[in-house]
Length: 468
Image 1 (cartoon, rainbow, N blue to C red):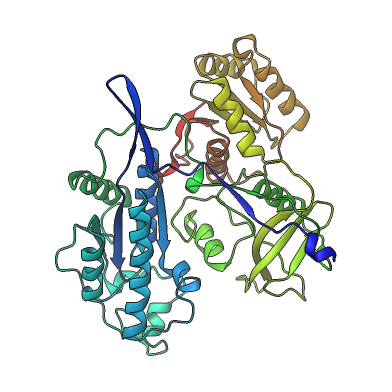
Image 2: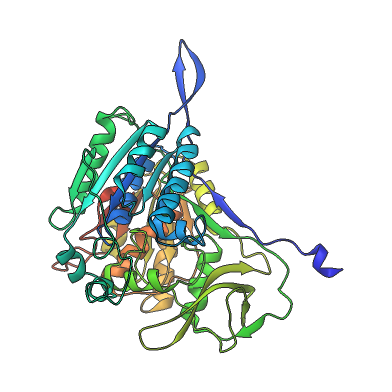
C-alpha cells in the first residue's frame, strides 16, 4: 500500500552544545566528560522564570554548555498531560520534572526547570536527589504580577473566577534557603541573569574562563529545518499572502531557527507585546497563519504555489477574531537546508564570520567603509533583501561581494527576508545572520535613531552588533 512506503515526517536538529570537551594533557588529546547540573527556577506564574532561564541558557551555551529548558507549560502539555492541580498531582508533576532534569544532568547537560513548583518539601526532595542543584527564587508580588498580566488571570483569580490559582487561592511556599533570590519586579533581568551565572560559577559547576565557541550557536540553541516527505493525501490547499509564504519558507530552511512553523496564541501574544517568545527568547515578529474553516488539530494544509505543508497542532483565535493555526512546516520537495549549508561553508573558509542584510542601495562612501570593516574578517555573509529600489540594492550588494578585498570570502545569500519596522527589523537581521553562522552583524543605523537592541543583552543575542 502507498501509505506503507511513505517517508515519516521528522525534523532535523543540528549543532547542539556538546556535553563533552577536549583538553590536552602531556601533549596528547584526551576527552573529558563535563559534569551536568540543574538550575531550578521557582516562583509564581508570570514572575520571569522562563525569561531568566532563557537568558542564563544563552550565556551558558556561549561557553559550550549543552542546556535544555524544561518549561512548566510544555511539561504540563506533554510529560504531565492528564494531571490536575491537586496537591498530589502538583507534586507528581514536579517529581517528573526532577526525574528528567536528573537524567539530563547525569548525561552532562545543564537542565533548567521553569515551573512554579509551589511546595517546599518536594523542591527540597529534588535537591537531595539531584545533588548538583541551583535553586533560583523569582520573587514578585501579586500586585505587580496582576498589573502586568496581559490576560487578566490574576484579576479573575482574585475575583474568585479561577480556582486552584497558585498564590491567590492555592498556596505557594517560598524557599527557605535558595541559592539565588531575584526581585523580578525591581531588578533588571540582565543583572539577575548575571548574578545567577556568578552563583553557578561559585558553586563550581561552571568554569570562570570557559572559552567561547568559534561558531555561534543557532538562536535558541538548535538549528531546525524541515525534512522532505511525500505530499499528504487529502491536504487542503490554501492561498496565503506573499510575506507569510516567505516566513514559512525561511522556517523550512532553518533560517528562522528555532521556529518550526506558524505560532500559537501564547507566542504570538508575547512577541507582539515584548518581542519575546513565551519562553523568553528574543523574537521580532509573530508568524501567524489564518486557518481554513474546516481546519482541525492534526489536520494538514498545503501552501498553494509552494512545496510546503503545515501540520496543524493547535487552533486559536487572534485578538481580531481571526482563526489561526499553529503547526510545523514540512516540505514535499527539497527546499535545501540553507542555514546549515551556509554555516558549514563559513566554517570551511575559516575565521570569524561577519554578515549584513542589504535593505537599500550602498553608496560609494558606505561601500568603502564596509569593505574596510569586513576586510579583516573571515567569511562575509551578504543578504540582499531590498526594502526600496530593488535592482539598485541587489547590484550594490553584488558589488560588495565582488570587492577584491573580500575575494574568496564573501557568501552571497539570496533568500526572501520580509521587511519589518526599524527596531524589529534589526533584531530579525541579527537572528538570521547568527543562524547562518555570523559572529558579528553589521546593522545599518541612522544618527539620532534609538538603539534597536535596547532591552536585549549581549549574552542572549549571542552575536556582536556593529552599526554602519
